Image (cartoon, rainbow, N blue to C red):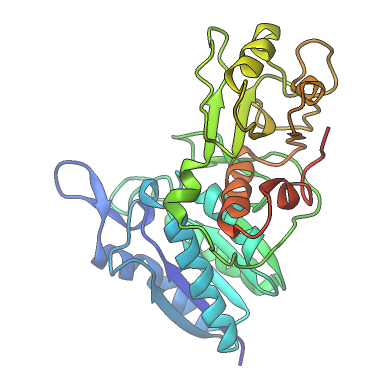
Length: 315
C-alpha cells in the first residue's frame, strides 16, 4: 500500500480570527486537513498525519532555518519508514523559502506544499480546493518538490510569492534542473550561519552600508543584475583591508534569466574584475538564492563558493 505523510506546519489555511487577527488554531488544523486525508484513503493510500510544530502549528512568518531543518528531518524519518510522498500544509508568506529548501535537501521523494490566501472562516476560502489539488498532484508525482496553488504547479527552486491578496499568489520565475545536496552536516549553528549572510536591496538612493563579516552577500539590484556605477567603488571601499564576501548578483525582477554581465558599467559581474567572487541568479527565485546561501553556510566543511558554484554561474 502506498504511504503518504501529511505534515501540518500552520499558516493561514489553519488560522482563525477570534479577535485581534487570525492565528493558527488546532481545531481548524484538524478539520481542514480531514478532507485530504479522506480523499487519499479513499484511493487506497495509507496516511500518516504529522503535526510538525504543535497541534496548531505556526504562522509561516516564524518559519526559519531551524524549522526548515526540522521539516527535512521529518521527511528523512518518513523515508526511512518507507514513505515516498509528502504533503506539506504551509503558510503562504514563506512557502517559497521552504519549497526551495526542501528541493535542495530532499532526495528520492515527492513533496507538494500548499496553503491558502483566505482563512477557513472567510468567504472564498481556497484551502479546501488547494489541499485536494495538492493531494491529486502528489499521487501523480514520483519525485521532486512543488508548490500547488490555485490550480497551478510550481517547481520549488523557481517559485516566488507575487501577490498578497489574489488567490493565485505565486509566479514561476524560470525553469531547469533543480540541484539537490541532501541534508547539511550542520557543522555551523543556524544563527551563526545567519550572521554570515546579508541581503542588500539596492534601491536608487542606496549608498554604502555594506556589512563587514558577511561570507555571502546577496545584492538585489535591477533588471539583469545591475547596480549604480558609483556603488562599485563604494563596495570596494567597504571591504578594503577586510575579507571579501562572495557576491550573488540578484534582481528585483521576479521572472526571467538574469545575466549580470549583459550591460557594461552597471552590471554586477564587473565586480569580478575588482577581485570579488560573483555569481549570477539565472532564473532561480530570490527565495532559492537565500536558502541556497544558508545551506552553503550551514555545511561548514567547505567555502560557500564551492556549493554555490554547483548551482550558479560564476563570472
